Image (cartoon, helix red, strand yellow):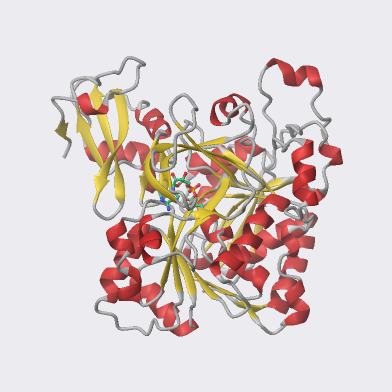
Length: 553
Ligand code: OOB
C-alpha cells in the first residue's frame, strides 16, 4: 500500500487522487445520521440466504440462481480471484453482458476486497485500454461466448498493451479461462488521500463507474460502499422494491441506472428477483415480462417509445408489470403521458447520474408532475443549487445550472485533479452540466445541457473524445461534433468537418473510427463538410453560424 500524500504534495497542484474524501466532519455527520452504515456491497444479499434460501435471486440466459446458490458462487469466486494473485484494493475491469455471471462476478470481487471498473459490453479497444491504463488494473474479466458476447480478440489486443495483465474469459456455461501477459506488471502506486488508513473499509472505493464524459479521456467515478449503498437502500422504498419484485434488466447491466436505481443491487437487497434481458427490443423484453412475471423494469426514452408503439398491437400479457422507470435522457412529456394508458403500469421518471444524485417521481405525485418533471432527489440530505453563469442562485421556476453535493455524490473524479478543479466548486458541489428548472415542490424539469456531450438516447458521447479521433485522419483539418435533434433518440451526433483537400468518404471516416477502437455508438450518425468552422469569441465552434455545409453521402 502506498503512503498517503503529504501536505506539501497536495498544496502545489490539485492532486490526482483515487478518492477525494468528504471532509471529515461531513463524513462524521453522515455516519451519525445513519446514512452511511459501514456495510459492504459484497454482503448486500446475505440476509436472504437464511430468509429465503430457495428464493430466485438471479435469472439469466446462462443460469438461474437461488439466493443460496448465488452465495455459494460468490464465495467460490471470491477465493478464486484471490488465487490469481489479486490483492484487496486492486482494480479489475469487468466487461460482461447481461447475465447471472455478471452479478456473481461483481459481488464476488467485492467479497474479495477487489474494485470492479464497470466497462460496458459494447466498449472496444479505445475505451477498455484507457480504463486499464488509468487504473493500472490487474485484470480484465470479459466474455467468451457468455450471453452471446465475444471479447476474446479484444482481450488479446488489450493485453498486448498492458504488461502483466490477466484476462479472465467467461464461457457460455460460466466457466473461466485465464491468460496472463508474461511481461512484468508496471507497479504504479495508488494515489491515496490523507487519512486513508483511518477510513473504514466501507468508506473506501468500492467500484469505478463511468462518466458520460465531456473530456478527451473518459473519467472514472470512485463510488464508496457507504455512498453507493445509501443510494440503493433509499431507492427501494421510493420505488416500492420488495421481496416480491421481479425486475427486468433491459439496460446494459453495468450502467449506474441498472445497477443501483434501484436496479440489480436494490432488488437483491430487498430479496426480489433479477431477470437479465439480452437486449431491450419489444419482442425480447415482452416475452420475458410474460414468462418471468416481471413487475418492474427500467429503460431509456427511445426504448420506452419502441415499447409504446409495439404495445399498441401487443401479443404478450404484460399485466404483471407495475412500474416502468424511464431515465438517462429527457423523456418527452407527450410520450410520458402515454405510458399508463398503453402499458397499463405506473411511470417513474428517473433523472440520475453516475456521479451520484438521483431524482425520482413519487407514487404520491399527481399525473402532471409525473409526466412533466424528472422527479426530486432521493435524500433530504441531497443539497441542490440552481445557478446562473456566475454561480448566483436563480429563483424557482427559472432555468439554471444544477449543482449538487450530498451523501452519495462524489467530491472528485478518479485521478483527475486538474479536471476536478473545474467540475466541482471550491465547497464541493458537483457541476452536473444540466440546465434545470426547480419547482416549489422540489421537483426538477431538465430543460437543457451545458456540457460538451451528445446524449444519444441515454448513451453519452463526449464530443472532444470523438473529435480527437477524427483529427487523426489525414483528410480532416478541423472538426466539431455537435448534437442534432432526432425523433427517436432525442439527439444524434453529427460531425462537421473541414477537409484538408478532397473530402474523405463517410465509409472511410467510419472505418477510421472503427480502426481506432472506438465503441460503435460514438461513431457520428451524420458527417457534413463545411468551408470553415466559425469560432465564437472564446474560441468555441459557433454551431449556429456554420455555413456552406453539405452532407457527406
Ligand atoms: C444516467 O447516468 P449517466 O451518468 O449515464 O448520465 C447522467 C446524465 C445527466 O447529467 C443528464 O445529463 C442525463 O444523463 N440524464 C437525463 C435524465 N437522466 C439522466 N437528462 C434528462 N432527463 C433524465 N431523466 O443517465 C442515470 C444514472 C442513474 C439513474 C438514471 C440515469
